[in-house]
Length: 87
Image (cartoon, rainbow, N blue to C red):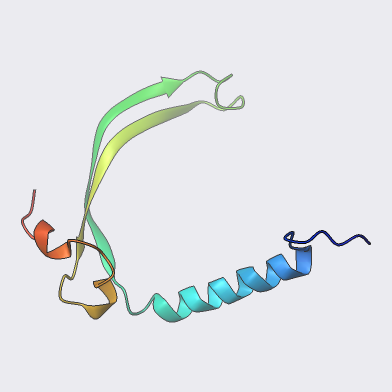
């Protein structure tokens, strides 16, 4: 087998993915956010040819959510204090 510098093999990629999943599992309970409202602004049917032969529709909209600005887990978010007023 030929090794190419700078290219990860399958086992290395699996190890990196496992470590990333573990770190995410450890951090996830610390940071909390929730979606409070979803607004669908537009829907349009897609032709079966565009969606692989299945009748589907495309939607466009907005999601609104909440974060605790005083939580240390959310401190990494820049300008959190500037966005305190609700839309």
